[in-house]
Length: 125
Image (cartoon, rainbow, N blue to C red; front, side):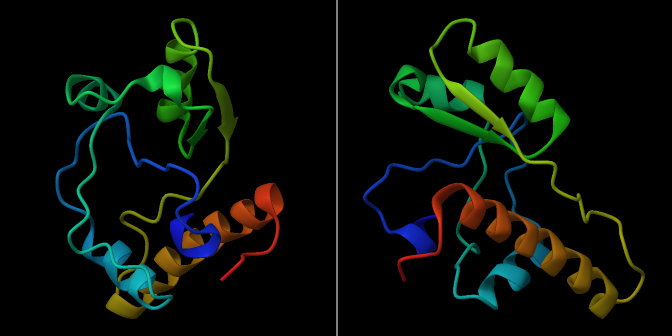
């Protein structure tokens, strides 16, 4: 989001669980398009609240999995947030060779990019 549309909108990455480390294939697929994730750390919605993020200040949650959609919908009972669900392929465990695995991660990356374009138009950068 930041790469394509700038930093004028506050964007925060969160998930249902804190996986701590970002998958190396994800880092490689995003690096190909100039997105640096090697220092990125995921955190959960609960951690966001614990660390002081006011979830009520967000306008939208984009859920990329059924589990994150369920958790986001739970939050909408407390906070007024819109929830979009983007059914994105989970590339984890797909493919046998490094190149096959990267292929699936690229497909997932490209699905997310297409959803961004569908929602917010062509990138400004």
